Length: 414
Image (tube, rainbow, N blue to C red):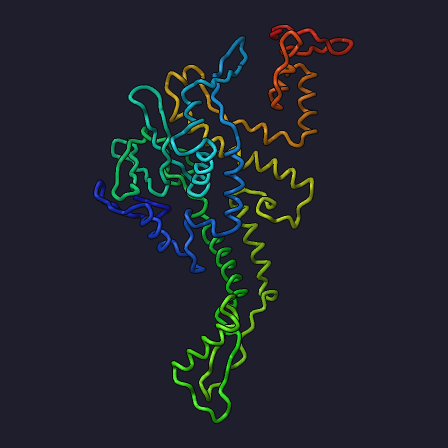
């Protein structure tokens, strides 16, 4: 099978590799030019990748997911919320150990890092799907059979392999170079990610004293060398007194007759260490399409462009991921009868797109005065209890020649 561009062979039904062993082998295989192995599993060692994954997962996990019934009347489309639909209940309680928020945090994290998300569709004795049991994407490989059907080969956590028909799984993915298995953005950008990890490790070693001795002791002229045991005790006694707690002030004892030359100086300002780290941060953010301010780069940020970039983030990053999940859920979780009946699944992105409180209220006011919203619809959007119908809560305003009229417009529910 092909895993992240690498051909790996497993004997069907008899492979005894666990997913942990697969990941360890991948880390050894995918070593970059910088000497750092980067996989979707360890990529968050790069601070920029961690910031990106957190930003996307937190946003999507906070979005409500609703099931609607879409109908046509007089040539117009309307949507009605279906809170008691089996899929709506399933998405509220996906399984016995994850909350709705936990499920979407994990699913989105896998989709962002691996380019795909899998869950086993657990059914009751009859009827609808009762639970969604996540499968680690690194343990699943899709393969097209000779009859063009698709089989999922799953490496079990306990070892061994099991095959599932694709219809038994819920599967969401991004683009796929082979048309089946989602491509991992991390693997496409692994050299850039590795360079940031390498720079971070270099910085940590530099400030942690690295391999350079803090102090060098040399024998006075005419003195003989200590034997190895005496040298070891001397160094240990010195460190115990001055550097045991911090690990600093490491000492070296030079044999008599050997002089130590001046060490090669590493000047981070001349090596453009900070500039290199900034460049990698920008490059990695660009790979994922995330605006710089979300990864901590505020160097060119202003109030206006940060606000616009945040809106672009929702439209150009969050919305595509949301659409991937929506289309996959409608394919895998709905029945043919549901689809014929107009059932659809949608994330509610309105809360993230409304802007400031003032902008939100001004927008709702325009819709209210234009007859597009009733008072109760407005109140529902801002989490307020509805007004009584007799108090005009369900009335739509109609623009009259001399101003607003409180009478319901034609076709509205009084």
